[in-house]
Image (cartoon, rainbow, N blue to C red; front, side):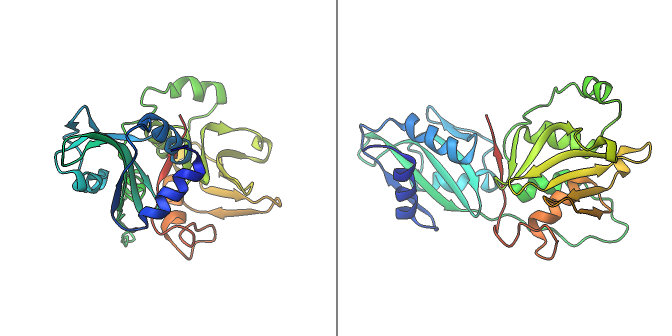
Length: 262
């Protein structure tokens, strides 16, 4: 089998949107398939390695991918993508031969829950739930003191947690998270913390001494500004799941993920 991204697409179409799996030709290199999927969906999570299943794996981390193989999975790596879990690696057939596999399963992600006016919300925890994020923190030791000293300002705590948790990548493969704020618009009182492929810039209006109170401002590709009275973590949660938000992504994706760039 000649493995290309087109081949991968054909295999995923063959499996369809519901639960399914394929044993692939024995001469196929499973690492080649893993690499192609990683190019498309970002870094995977390892569910099974050398026959040992990660004990933390549950339904929120892709456990449904292991069901077809019972205890015969040898190595399975998984990606959360939209409303699917996608997995690949190797597993033993019922007769005992080890073969490369491709497997998909339905993925359910909780919606944004109703919020009482006086409720104290941990928006980062909600963002982790919404995206189905299962990876370890990507940049837990980032030196924020050095970054803030260089920028000459403290930064919002939810943004710092976002970068520490997710690292470099994009929500739904679309909203790119800056690893430190860009200062291109600083003369206008804006720091840029994210952006999209449509050239919208997601900023803070960096007024006041408490960065956790900085509101989000979206600078559109045509130079117009729209102010939102909320922090970055809440803003991302809302654009992912609120179909009525001006910058919603809920119209395009029913469930959500974070594409990590290695």
